[in-house]
Length: 202
Image 1 (cartoon, rainbow, N blue to C red):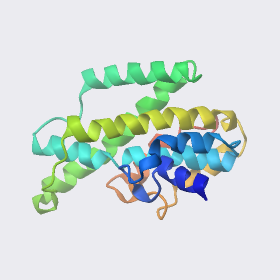
Image 2: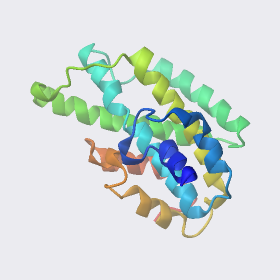
Image 3: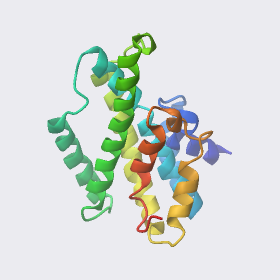
Image 4: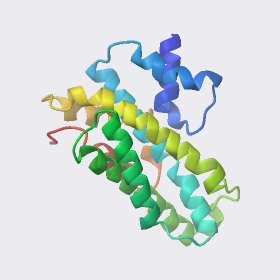
């Protein structure tokens, strides 16, 4: 039960986007204590993708209120280089890590653009509470990205399995588990976030 609770914390089940438990730092260890199965590894990586996508609204909320562009290519390049280096240290070699994390950025922006379209059409839907991007939201995005490096490292052993995409697709299309699917462009964003996980995609 303790491992299950920690696992829920790590993957951000039920759309969780902020730490709600004190022992969060031990969650990764709780997961790694046990040998991963293909099912648990898939849930882990898809769950972290969901957790990261759920932060897109807070990012674009701040940018919309401050008339900032969704695209920030200089920062994106810096972040991608940093994350790719972390991935290589974790054993995620070649260009795969860089391409995968570029997908995460692109998926996040798909949801952001969906919200811009929604709020532009109906400003009454725009949230009035605006979390600070630098102090509040970006640290949470960074934490989710670090969890994703771990999740990807665990998942890679199953990447070439013939049924890899069946597992990923089935998990990624569960709206009751992953609330990012209900976000604007959420289904397309989730597919973008996970489509590179498997060596073969149907």
